[in-house]
Length: 369
Ligand SMILES: Cc1cc2nc3c(=O)[nH]c(=O)nc-3n(C[C@H](O)[C@H](O)[C@H](O)COP(=O)(O)OP(=O)(O)OC[C@H]3O[C@@H](n4cnc5c(N)ncnc54)[C@H](O)[C@@H]3O)c2cc1C
Image (cartoon, rainbow, N blue to C red; front, side, top):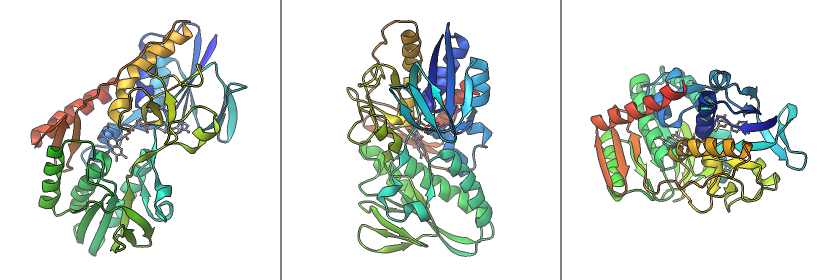
């Protein structure tokens, strides 16, 4: 009997669980360590913020998925590895022995890079925490009178969707407030994506009265205000930080090879370049031969090859390489029942694009709920 430990209930691991449920692993015991039992599906979180989805719509119940897959669930948080003794170290719990390990713990915006962010900003990760804080915030905003300034820092897909979703929801909830949502980002929005998508989104921000400050990185966050790159302080009653993904600090102490940003370095089989017993997928891993943006779509796509390779290794076979696609479809909800889709150098927009996104996301969720 061999013991496979899965750390984190991220997008790739939920597929591994489903796969093991459909075709059980012979002669292997599997344990999943998850910090959150209800694991969020990132693609639908801005829709949750906008008020289109309920909590249940956009969360996967790991306990149920594990039960169906015959996988033991440990509700806990991994804090490190003892690779010599082959043990996963857990917070406030005894360590777990492993023969084979797979890590899919995601990433978090680098709040440490902005002074005061850990004290004053509402964190968007863990996403489970964002959901709770957001509902609380909406509750308080119902009776808010006068100016209400909300600042979102970070102009990637997550930040854009979040700013648009917040604007939409607060206009419904904070009826007596004079709302101003602002998105500030250090470069231009959506770097690396089509110019056509940037053009459309800038027009949407203008139309909706959402202030967009490009080339305006945040320097410092204080009580009720944020200092941007130009040295000006901008009023902010609430600040959300959705900046570049950063790696879990405990990776640095595992002795595993990391990329230059501290993410686990893996080969094209999703296996650590320094330890045959460790696999990793999703945001927390960087496939050195095929670097891609840290986005949920890639974590989702890695689910099937990861499940296949874990099964092969447990069966004494060689894992197989996997080449992720270079171009990918990105659909950004604009919070108001519309969306912008972009792939390669084109972009389209409309209500039907939102229906399309909603269909894709709900279909994905149905597979795991
Ligand atoms: C607001 C927002 C909107 C976004 N929208 C999109 C989008 O529309 N499309 C897109 O492609 N990407 C989107 N992203 C990016 C997306 O969130 C990530 O790329 C995606 O979640 C990565 O998936 P993952 O499987 O790597 O990890 P995650 O989905 O983050 O899952 C990690 C899991 O591991 C668990 N975990 C973490 N640490 C530990 C630990 N130490 N021990 C045990 N368990 C642990 C967590 O509880 C979680 O369940 C968005 C991000 C944000 C912030």
